Length: 126
Figure: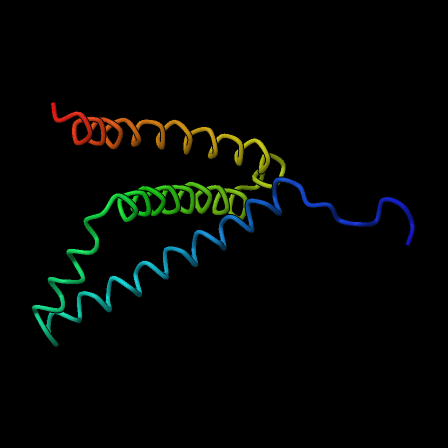
């Protein structure tokens, strides 16, 4: 194989992978959400038990991950729309990706502030 023909993956490939992974994670959450909500019709007591298991620090961390996945998926989806429907989109797709990642980081840091504040209040009781 000639040197330089192996595709090593650049920003476009990794954004494609991240978009697919976040889409699958969001779908999985929605599937579980529909199932646990449907459980209320079968057995309200079982539903209460399942919902009680969601009130743990691990699930709180997973919820933060869900917010991160939805936010990235949405921002990257807007970037994909711009690439597809804007005549100059393909030329600026890399810059738009880094812009979307920058906005995502700022919003996720902002979303972490109340989570950490709540955790500190729980641990220290103030």
